[in-house]
Image 1 (cartoon, rainbow over the protein chains, first blue to last red):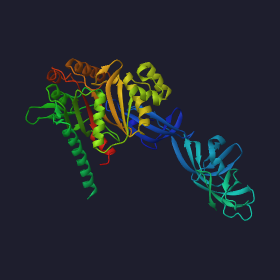
Image 2 (tube, rainbow over the protein chains, first blue to last red; image 1 turned 90 degrees about the horizontal axis):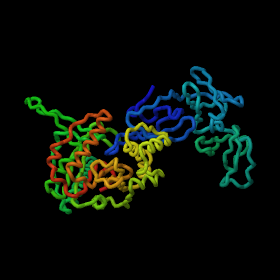
Image 3 (cartoon, rainbow over the protein chains, first blue to last red; image 1 turned 90 degrees about the vertical axis):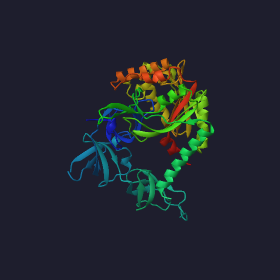
Image 4 (tube, rainbow over the protein chains, first blue to last red; image 1 turned 135 degrees about the horizontal axis):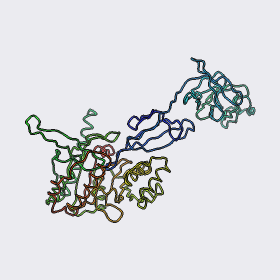
Length: 186
Length: 295
């Protein structure tokens, strides 16, 4: 199904250069002496990149069959990451490339948002905050309780996050997945 | 004071200041008819048609003016001298954050002003309205060099199509001027929205509208405030024959893209048969101006 510029609105999912994209901003520009245009900002749902295009009024783009569903992360077999939609029990899998940085934050049983395009998963967004376990870090220096400097800690997903000096192996920490920053002890 | 009242008073102050500016420059305020016999010929502006006098069997089709331009030019050709007007204007098929079917226009003409002189005059008006930021003046061609690395005056229809394609935009346009405008909207406007006061001048001749042409450029300018087009001005063409040619060009284009066309407004051409004095004129959108100033 095609959508004309007059139907464009924020959040609409359309196919652009072969990829599903979401409209982030749609601005109608009508120059005093020219024809009307839509200046549109898209987010490419696969690459995450922002694209800017300008269309004359009346142009149309193909709609993208895109759905965002809450799913449970089940397990990884090393090649694919497997998810389950909890209502239908339908299972989906994503490649490492499609997982993107979500790989760093998901542990089994976690809930996350999976985007499906034509019923195929394309991206995963982890929760904003996740709780992970420290599996490796240098012991904190004695006497230094201010935690000014911080130190790298490897968490159970493999991701490395700067943590305060008092955090030790086996501690559970909260991590903000949008910034990859330590946000407190769990 | 209620918010409504505050806003009304602020708007009133704007109108008072505009009037004071022109009165002090000995520019005469005029009022011209807004119900016209002919629709505009502008290819991308549509007049709103109104039917009148049906009940008294004197049915006629009239058109709400889309700007007071042609009525004011009749006054100019008859010796009015410098004139200005503040009025409501009406346009069909307008929609968007900055567009509607009715808006308020300030239109004024200054005798013996060239385009640059008129831009200075507008700058003085903005100062009188409290808008005192630095003014940027940049030619249409320079804007394209600077922001798009494009030689716009030396690009023909085929060149422009290639540029549009390279940007991932449709090149399905019939005329060079439409692609110029597409590229301006796509590449230039998002850049100049960082500039508080920006005049763009010397448009390509294909976009002359009713401005004097010299070589490959037309003495036309636009004023952008924070990237929003607020004014459009010309050093005006002067003879009835030039107007006839420009109207015919627009009507030809309207016909080409299957828009409603009318006959050339012979009444207007007769009224200006002695020609316009050497002058420049500009139309300013009052609502858009109002939204960018703090009185």
